[in-house]
Length: 122
Image (cartoon, rainbow, N blue to C red; front, side, top):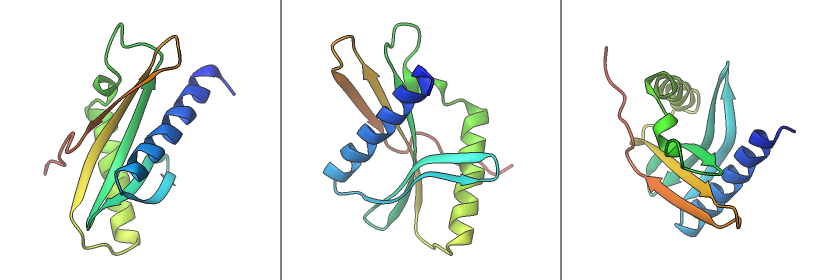
């Protein structure tokens, strides 16, 4: 496995542990629909939360969450819509980003951005 894939997988495990500590219920990890993937699907109370996890070894050039651009947001929204329709959920939906920066000593800085973006109607 390539190093960036290992870092990404580690970040997703850290994010799941973090969410569990916050009393979220984990519904799915790495849920795939077509060519689109959602890193973590969870529940916060009655709200279904679609979480994009971004992990980096450094935030020197750009913070990890800044890489979730409009293109990525559209993919997440499309996948979330498919998930909600497939499982016939009628709950509120939220899109979060969990940003993880791992320093040279393997210390992890976690930032959880709730309601990171909203689906737009076009």
